[in-house]
Length: 389
Ligand SMILES: Cc1cc2nc3c(=O)[nH]c(=O)nc-3n(C[C@H](O)[C@H](O)[C@H](O)COP(=O)(O)OP(=O)(O)OC[C@H]3O[C@@H](n4cnc5c(N)ncnc54)[C@H](O)[C@@H]3O)c2cc1C
Image 1 (cartoon, rainbow, N blue to C red):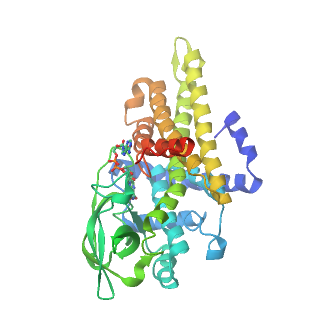
Image 2: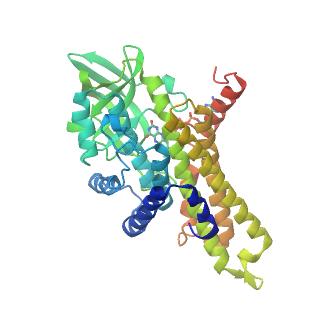
């Protein structure tokens, strides 16, 4: 961020500004060169490559950061974590999504895991040895998580799991999966190890986020020990809905990162491209576009930051988290589209990054609750009438 737009940074503490500065330098030097590499290869990093990337990001607390101090983590507040997360999303949103999942797996394990679970799953994850994924969605279950079909049946001193999950981020590289499934007729969370082919994955090809893994996962008689039940049996749905609330703000911040990158590209191009005897940025309509885009990026960021501050306070804020998610993700699509417009013909080519911003932005209104679902939550809370039933 340069010039007048950087003024807003003065609202952050000196410590936060230094952290952002340090992270930007790291991201430009270490991550930026890899982005094009993976984009051109058209596939996500292999497991060992993702492990290396997570280890680098953990130097900034981006894996363990959200784990509270009383659970042995650094306990970075969500607001500060979000500042670095947005910087990551601006450079490599696909990796931001991967870290969002890994950090939330860590958060769930730290909050709900038994000492044994922490030893087997959380500690190796924090040492950068294991990758986890979170499985809720299924081929027949998306917006209505209460209809989950995957079942874990008690067998001996453990469980046998049958079912299929879909759209699972980090699925290809995962060593274990936290799945929402039905246990004794109630939704619960269970950890299933991948070891010895216990579950299989198939990568789903997408229009954007090509360097982020999104998988179909097959549990065809997978086994899990009884001790792998996470949290209260039957508490699965409540726990998942609570988790969604934090995660959806980070999806919003991913969109802010993409929108900020698209805006920066548009500003750069508007200054150097000349038409009708002057830079196109000197034409009034282009100035209006840039003004609108810059305002919308800020509005989206502020909604996300407010939601994170409320989450840090520990108060109920599902209205505000839903506002942040739908607004940030939908605006990113519009902003990236406008950035393509400002680029004219070159904007739709693979030689400029705005087409990638647009393909990436178009993905984000879907995960962690679609725009329609966010608006139904907000509407329900404001009106006191649920449209879900
Ligand atoms: C990149 C990516 C990563 C993801 N990562 C994960 C992951 O790691 N783990 C995981 O479990 N899931 C993941 N998901 C799945 C995601 O959460 C679901 O795709 C999302 O919840 C929507 O579900 P669906 O695709 O089945 O759409 P559906 O629920 O079938 O919805 C289809 C359309 O109908 C609309 N709709 C549905 N119900 C209503 C209603 N009551 N009123 C009005 N409109 C409605 C929706 O808004 C949408 O427009 C990911 C998805 C993507 C795209």
